[in-house]
Image 1 (tube, rainbow, N blue to C red):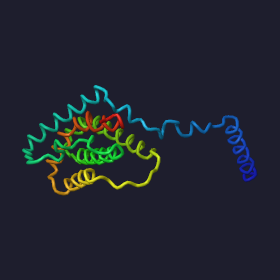
Image 2 (cartoon, rainbow, N blue to C red; image 1 turned 90 degrees about the vertical axis):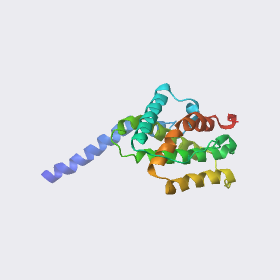
Image 3 (spheres, one colour; image 1 turned 135 degrees about the horizontal axis):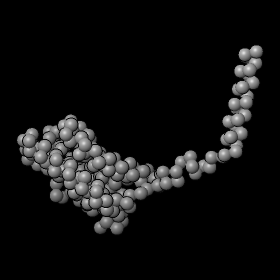
Length: 197
């Protein structure tokens, strides 16, 4: 008796599920939001005041932390000559991606618990920028692979080399000192595309 009831229940459940599915079809558009893979870099031509304020607060806190740790650095990872306008338009996102990746890696490796809450919003913003940048570069039509220019290769090599040679404190100092250029210069330039000259 029990097995028969079980056999009857299964078809009834399947019928209910299938009927419900047919009664309320799921449109294709709702499975994946239509803008999920769209490029929204233009929004970064200017950041919201509260985002910039969060970066300023983080920069001040890190500067104080570096002073307390007595970190002294003889050189800057991002020299004054670092200007994305010197690169070809299609190379700029790659340079910005490398800059973002290093910044995120350095800041996420900070172990001071007092800095955690202060870095929360800047890290969230940087991750969002990184994901949008990745979406934009992936959505570009595939063209013939172009080898990077000498300048881009040099910059990427410099970033890689810094991770291996610089002390953790000096890496923190470099990426923090680069916040303004990253957000107000490089990011804005990539967001403007061909209009950044």
